[in-house]
Length: 63
Image (spheres, rainbow, N blue to C red):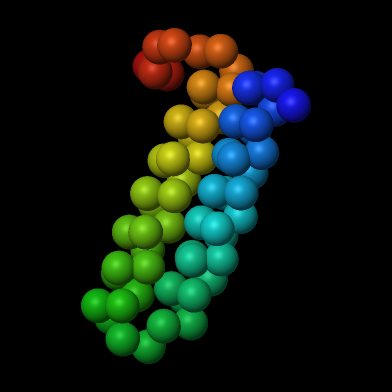
């Protein structure tokens, strides 16, 4: 598998994890836990965006 394919797969995994964590946050009854889960989901989304941009060969961040 190519580096781009590996990065794309990683990005997809991160997006899936972010979605699962977001769903867990929606079900959480404790406000602090909900916020922690939302923050974690946001970080996972950011990581997925970075992984997908690296797979595309972009070396500069989007503006």
